[in-house]
Image 1 (cartoon, one colour):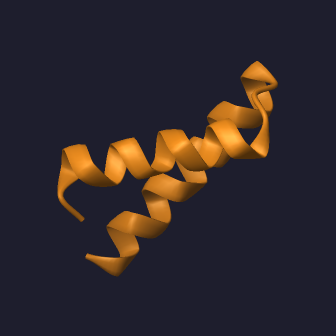
Image 2: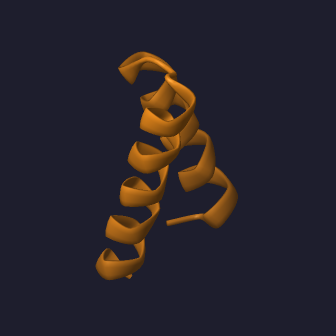
Length: 39
């Protein structure tokens, strides 16, 4: 479960850098993903 969470945050970080979204947006996106995946 933790490994999966790490993968998700890594994915969000990569996505954030690629599309130049701010850290705040990345965190919001990560939180939304957490809710969706119920991690």
